[in-house]
Length: 412
Image (tube, rainbow, N blue to C red; front, side):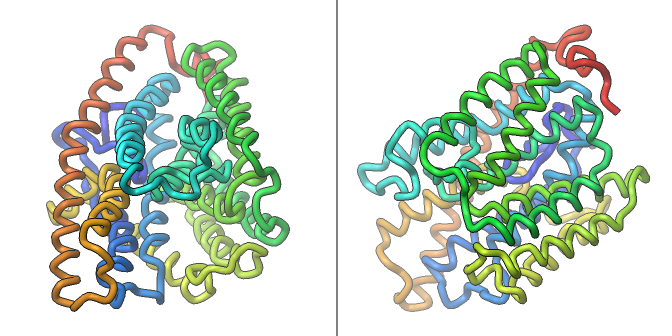
């Protein structure tokens, strides 16, 4: 486990540090998830004949990430009991690389234009500032940034639950969100609130609320407002409302697994949650994609769950170092690979109809470039950011500062 209170998350989760502190199986899971997402984006451009359609590589990878986030983030916050340090850690863990990738994409937009899904107005700035991109229906400058929206919603909800003492019922929360995904799918065909104003409103609430959480003024009330705002955006202004609610259910299922492992909760809510998440898109109004066809969706969820279970079964075993390393750099790998693959194909040209040997050679070269860039990003952006976060957290720490007592009493 990491020594900082940020814990480990999905693609955005920090790598743990310190001898004996590493949960290698979680790193391995993140390595598997990152590799799957990279493959999802690499294969159609380089080796389209190898792309599987009996399950979704990309959805599989992010479900593994979300299970890891749910497993580790809430219990890490509880163990440290320091909301301020948690958010300082999150900021310095997430934003340095996120901003660096954003700057890279914008700097090279004269060559490869920014995605059409990114609005050309201030709402894009507001949505990127909060990371609540997908839940306010704003595209990210890098395609993979959309999942960070749901990580951020989860952090906000967990913080609110933590401060009011409602964070222990993870299994119930998982089932409630899973049932909510089914209901939302039946009644919502997309975002209810559209346009630029959801991005602006959430940005204002996000900035004001986090300021209160960090400085301890009306901390619990502010956290509750943030949590409610995040959930309202999730249901009312996100691109695919049922999917967003289902993702939160999956993360709470990860937490419920951790509770069961610790002997503080049952495992059966996880099975109920999985069944409801499987059902969510089957009759949903907005579910016309190949990856939510019943057989594909079920297979993808089963593979993600099986992978997580396999990782747990291998706890304490020696795992492949390459896989653990991929987990260590998974956040960099996750964010940088898509822009780099786009730049590579701009130089190489369309490879989809090239000779298989040439496709394979270009795929290996592109993958080497992505892995090298990810290693550099981790070394020179991620790690310094984490170090700065620890320094800032220590600077703000002190007797009675940042803990739950300053937020209105100890929760749980």
